[in-house]
Image 1 (cartoon, rainbow, N blue to C red):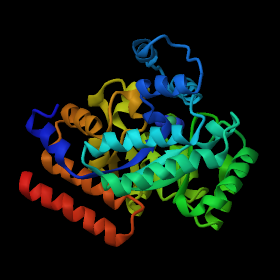
Image 2 (image 1 turned 180 degrees about the vertical axis):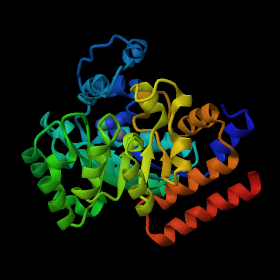
Image 3 (image 1 turned 135 degrees about the vertical axis):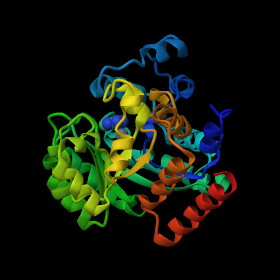
Image 4 (image 1 turned 135 degrees about the horizontal axis):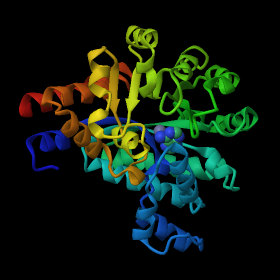
Length: 340
Ligand code: ADE
Ligand code: ZN
């Protein structure tokens, strides 16, 4: 990958990630190590067996395996190790900023304290800042297959840690769980000062994207692929310059698209949509940021200029303050002048 001119360009360009589930960065090697020290049995004999199980026909098949994998995370150190492993990996990929989702209910439902989860993640993010120079923000996601009351409990648990959390999000099984189900929780979260985002239009219809916009007041759409089925919606998203956090390898692995060259990225760019490239669940979908950029660049024959634009979009669509955005975009510009 890094040997082609476009591969080298992608590898070196400074970039930000805006759609990453920390539980989805759990590599099988670390999963076995943590399972062993916590005395938990996993149903696979070895790493190869785990990897063979990673074949999905849709979002739900993936989620079942993703939640099972998270079962071995028990202690604060486990959440630290998980998060720091991700940061180490993306540091090698010239990622300078990341906005990370975590799913507290995946853990609190198993009896792990909210504090254990967030303290481990936060400690790793701080080390990421001081030791690796990676800036980061945290987004707390509600599991949409659970009910509104459970989301309210989670919101309540998060309040002592408000300073560490920038936004709330909505993930898990999309079909049958529209954004409207969580309107009141999102209203309350906004009263507490959280920004809001939501997964919408990954498997669900364009209508769910409308709901996320109008009822959840989102600042960004996660995925949003199916917006293209509704012209008025596309117009609205362009008008608002509402960012979409696209995840090419995830789309391919979860059969949102059948082939990478079917990916709607170019259509979206042509329509004036603000799009970004992200990895979603890199340990499950075969690649981190650079692999996602490279996979789509190769399939759609993207130019260096287009990659440069996508990297700039990743900062413009981030939750960084305007000053920091400018500083980071200046680094992208400098890279493009030297290598473009
Ligand atoms: N949780 C982790 N990855 C997800 C995705 N791609 N869609 C919905 N929920 C998720
Ligand atoms: Zn996601």
